[in-house]
Every structure is written in C-alpha cells, then in structure tokens.
Length: 227
Image (cartoon, one colour):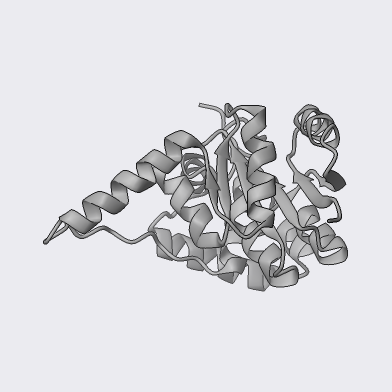
C-alpha cells in the first residue's frame, strides 16, 4: 500500500515543523504540502488531492470550518482531521457538520494523531478520548429523553458571508475584502450588512468579539480591538 499523503494546515510554522517531523518519522506517512492560511489549504487540496488534511480551526483568511467545507468540494476523497486547542461541544459539532472525519485536541498524545490519520484513511472516524466520551454520553442522553429540551439553532451564514465576517474580524477594510475575494466593494458592503442583520450585531467591534468568541479568529489577531 502506498504512503498516506497528508496536507498540514496550521498558521504557526513551529507547529507545522513539529507535526511534519512527527509524521515523516513514520514509514507510511508522507507530508505532501503545508498551508498557513485556510485559503491556501483549499488551493493546495484542489491541486494535490491529499488523502488526509490535518486542519487547525483558527486559521487566517479562511477558518478551519469553512476551509473544510471547501476542501471537501474540490477534493471529495480527502479526509479532514481537525487538530485544535478548542474542545468545546460547539466547536466539535461545527467541525463534524462541516465534514471532518476526526477531531483531536492539540494536547493529545502524538500516537493518537498517527493512529487517527491511519484510521480516517480507512474511512473510520476518530476522536480524542475526552471528546469521544462526551459524544457517547450525548448520544445516550438523547436516546433516553422522551421530551428533550429544544435547542436554539446556530445562525446559518452563507459561505461568502462567513468569509466576509472573518476578514472583517481580521481588520480588512471593505476595499481590501473586495480585492481578496474578487468582488466589488458594493457586493462586500451588501454581504457585510447581511451578516450584521443575521447575527443582530450592528457594529464592527461587536462582530470582531463574536468572531473571537466563536473561534473563527484568534483573539490576539491584529483586527481585534484592544480593550
């Protein structure tokens, strides 16, 4: 069997170097490429069609959830393995909904990452033990409740709206967003207004705080206003 081709996606060079060293030490794994933004990850996936994509969530230009969705459109045979510092139920569920086949927290043992890559290549799902336990408990509770409490659905943004939201939160002006996405300034302004209306948020600072709270951006990015 040929080596498992892997695309590493993380905006921190030192993290990518560590992951690459770990994976290339394995005889059956090859790091085909590295990406430091979500948009670059989508471009590389479309070009290289890696078997496994190791994806961080808090990625610049295009966050890990949206990058996962786009990667699975341009390289549908790829398996996305999320490797993140976020371990909340909301982050995990959003990753699963986006199409991720595995979710590991960065504090996980190195052996878990290697095992997860091999498992998802086979078509299996894989989760960090603490996350797997929570998923099992949630499934059990859902099955035992005859009248479960209704949940409030997340606001659904379109792909383009999500991209615009992230770039706003990273400090891009409308003109810069238009250039980045290949849109007119007027179209960007329309998307910006639609995002504000859907989220019921009507100023930029609050949009940035929302994006940081949801893990769409890291709170220390330049676009986040200082308190």
